[in-house]
Image (cartoon, rainbow, N blue to C red; front, side):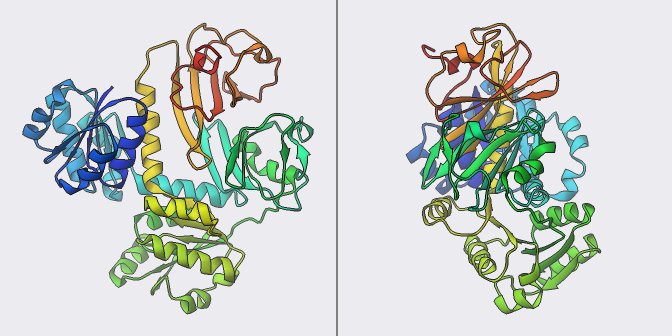
Length: 454
């Protein structure tokens, strides 16, 4: 596809990286030339300096031949105007990042009037991800597939787990269907077989029905403690969305924010929350406000360094579930290399980019079978792919044990008529099934690509 990206900030650059890997023809527009320098040095894209909401700029950049425009600047108005101009000038589909709560509350009207194919709110998406982690306290990461009929849940296996030092085929439970799809151990990522032994300390990702997520922890011996109160450091938009969701779920919320005017706004918007004016990095203040007794602590300040440091402090002083927002690309590698104990890491730019990538993939490939969604796992070295099997092909009506699969490909689940099947070797893929696979291979575009010789 020929895709235009307006805005080359954190989200724009990350999105360009992902779409470039997929082989799309990209044009990236930003009004600041310095934002395009690194992009030009690292990726094979066309860059254009200018205002992405300008008819003249879009016309000169070639919008008439574009299939899709994605507007992800830091200003909602520019994103919406860029999409409107692109629709009129290029007749292409459009995706806009819309962050302000007031605009997003009216998003259905805006989508209809502006003809948006998709609108995405990074802060709301991040808040929803955090809420899922709080609702399933033992999980490090949760991601949904097939319209949330399937969950991939990642958690750390403790020394006390029943599964420690057992083969995967020996932990099968007939009453609660699940499948271990990825194991992360000592910096390496394993796509397991039935004979793979799980060890204490492994980060284990499983595929299961969302209703069974909590039951998995019970049968594995992973301790669960319901979260009833949460402390949030930082008073930004993610904090607002998260607090609103938590309060709706009857979870107590205390917010520590450094700006008095923001505290006043949050007090009006969230009358049931406790709002504290103070520096989230003030260790004494954190202790005074009950950090040691909190069930969960979420670091959502504007600075990655602050979030990491206060989460490390919270790890020392409490047993709270930790969730830490990190935006800078360089910090992610440092966190992984040094195994910092800061709990689940939330990266809004990746959440946004992955949601847009799922949307792009759903727009392409008119073949019988195509990728509908993608989720990157294990420090981005593994992909979970969702295929929609729309017609007869080489993988349909053949027992899975008889398919000649490429190495390190695991068929995790089949969704048929809305029901989840955790497959065995005797199961088959049928037309109209949704199939989820996990693989270390990149660039799979068709379900038949999982076979040797394709």
